Image 1: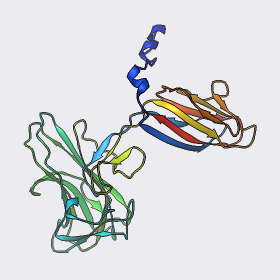
Image 2: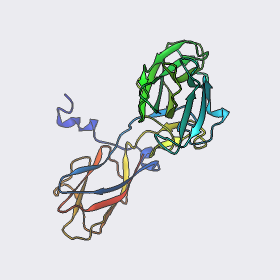
Image 3: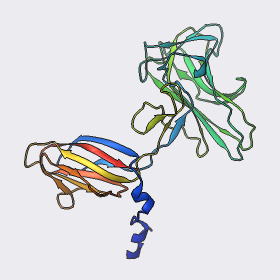
Image 4: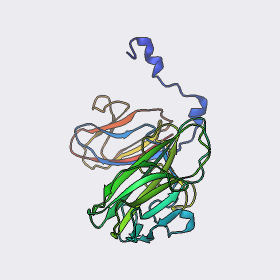
Length: 308
């Protein structure tokens, strides 16, 4: 059992180094929230999910080009603004109705040999005009002939459906490229769309990450040009070092109480009077959460958390 003795505080009492104290803020979190007389968490610190996406035009926001890596197989593919799971466009696939397995593939750069297992995962969302037909998502070898993993059959419902597949590359496998395939399960000519396309390589888990591209939101970044480069999700804020928080209320009784790393109450909270602002002068070093509660009413607070 952790923290059994009074001296165990040394395990959780933070002692910032000189380097940490001089480290500039590298992350922020904007806040605007209507409070109540029940305490709520305004912000939670933590690394969160870290992930990357090798597909350079994953939401097909940019015009199609050879550098995107999308290649038709037994179908026509175009960028379409008629449907989208996110953004303004998606990849429209028009099967030729000549055989099973019509659609498109995306091929990765070569993945270097490793003494450890490497984990591939692929995902996308699809939408079709009729559930009477179906598609499947696969990971294949660079020749496109060997199926290494599959999502299984997924009906082309008239709404966006997320499908995934994952594969573990055995240790010491020679460097090679791999392909993401989305193809028809049966022969048909029903158009379907693909969006939020992701190919990830990890060395820690075969689990499929939440979808990533550089425009998703806070802490998501492109490695280069927007919609023309790989993208990643940065670690979240693990240390809160600064706060600016305004009580927007004009009603005197609507006092807001703010607490760090514990649940706010009128007893332990820092009061922000109506129209007032809480702002620190010296760096903070909190690593859990910010909680807030109102003495009465439903005042709105707004501001920003700074940290690393």
